[in-house]
Length: 275
Image 1: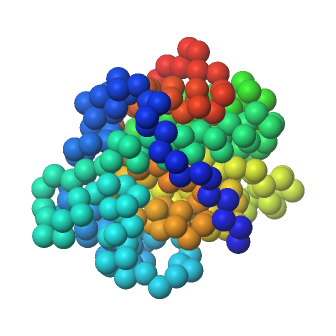
Image 2 (image 1 turned 60 degrees about the vertical axis):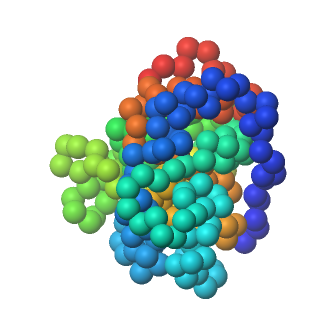
Image 3 (image 1 turned 45 degrees about the vertical axis):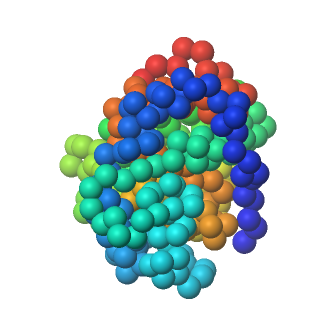
């Protein structure tokens, strides 16, 4: 599988200090609300390939706890102190912005080239509005955003997948639940193929939506929290092109400065973006 990873040069020397302050004040980066205990336990649960922790990412290397821990230090900015086992943990603002610049380069390339983009999310109250903003901007720039052409039912647990403002989500019993499962996007991609629709040129997503898509050989970029090692492992294995580290369950309007940064870097319209 081709590794399309883009330049990892840190762009923060050109980043306004106001953006760094905004991200850290919102606790999107810096001292985040995701507890250290969860960050550490999720590494092991990922290695144990528990449902909702593997994100549909096929392992192509032999990973152990120490290797994944070191990866999360290097790519996310969690504390490197192995004796620190409880309480506060961190996400590096510099790493978030460096990854966001790489994310923007990919999104801009595909959107401005008129590519077909599938947006999906397992975090309805945090990341869905963020993806909706990107979907609107990409479509305005000439991209084809993958939308519904009829109901797509998922047999398990009586749910289905549907899109909200251009972003695909898992729906069940009248609600849009939080999920890390790769099952919704697996069913969606299979149904699109059955209908004879072209696969997306890019998947922009989080959690199992991004992990499964990248693991299936589709070009994928996404967002992940410091307790989501699967997406960073997928990036290290060359399956997901960019994984942006941030707290993924903040009030959506607080992501606006980061959205604007990404759209400007992508060369996409940022005017009138509101969540």
